[in-house]
Image (cartoon, rainbow over all chains, first blue to last red; front, side, top):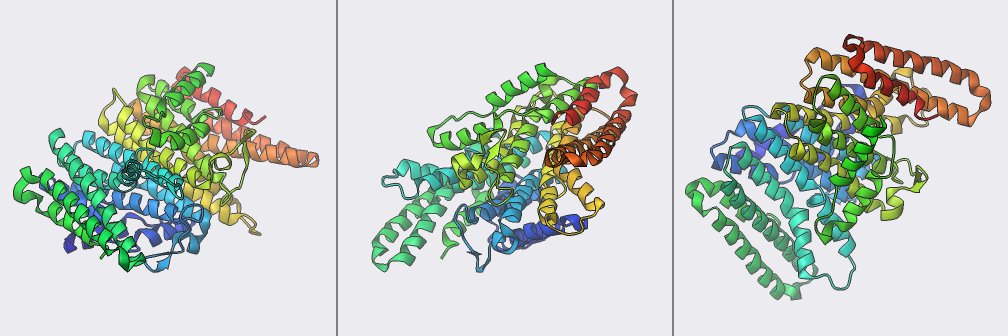
Length: 272
Length: 272
């Protein structure tokens, strides 16, 4: 797993370079956020899925980079004063604090479009039909039924008195699980997985996405009040159950699923 | 030309619909800006180019829609208070005035990603290799060497004492001409045009992009001071020369180039 993370860092570093002085500033701000660390969960899910179906790591590299670019874009835009207004991320100033809101918005836009261009330009060794499908999956994961739609409903639900469980689950599914689902499915599609295989990957990814969100909520509860330990215990059981469901979806693949099973555990443990 | 514009309006209207109540708000804000009128120059360039090379209009429809989505995204984000801070566009409130900065940012993000998903999902009747190339062209047109990069340099040049002609031309090339170039090249690629054909299309598009910008500057000059009529006259001659150069690049295609020649004239006339 550590090996894949190091590979991902190298790929991200190589993916964005300024070739003319006029783009130095925008590329600098894009690189600042893209190379700011993180667990690189989405590229690792993509690699693990493609290997599970016997695909080549090389063919999945551009998609892995694109997934992290999309994730980074969503962080840059979410941190803006007009959204969550966060000054710090992982202990470092957020993009707009260093480069201004205007450059941060445009760096996010450029990152999003570059993610698609990167996959279209760099993917080698697989039929073009699969590349088109991967680009469709990536596009869907950010749209109204993806990151952006989930974030809009989240923003509009804040401070509302009675937000139902259905709405919360919808938000988590699209704000968090959609891109995890895209990561696993892109890996599977590039390897030529069948529709049945892809459906199992979707189930796995949606479950770990919800488990991740529940784990995140546990952290919030624990850090806000020690007395709420009981709630945390109950949530932990839910997260565990979701991870078990995720793993069950991959049972048909036996040993080949090991990396994805490991990532499922990693995802709920990562915040602690 | 009017027929193509009406067709484009119908395609845009059909391209974005909310399918679940949770996406009603984001889709409403996306539709508000996408269907707010405009000359639809980019879809028309795409259709004209594909027809010049004998391609089918049907195959180019998703790309035509995507080009207008990308253009609309750039308008929504450019109008934000963190950027140009415009409250009105074509006499109507801008997206963030109606929906808030947060929703406007996310509507733009969703529109940008949807543009790629739409091409990947809906393009029919051409080899997948061409669809991949179109998606690469679209991605490049928004990135650091495209709309976003041009806009960053423009913002950073504002109020600077000595901005050289080179810098201004770079800004116009990427902020305006890049997406026009993408429009013509997507149409050409979908029709199976050769590399030589595509290179001619690039020349045509870059020239009309610069002509458009010069025409835009003329309008600014005319509206700001009647005394500057002489400068306007000189600029008009430059715009005319650029349009002539654009047309010359398409000379090898004779009569088949007529729609693109007409669009070249239309582009410098459109503001008056």
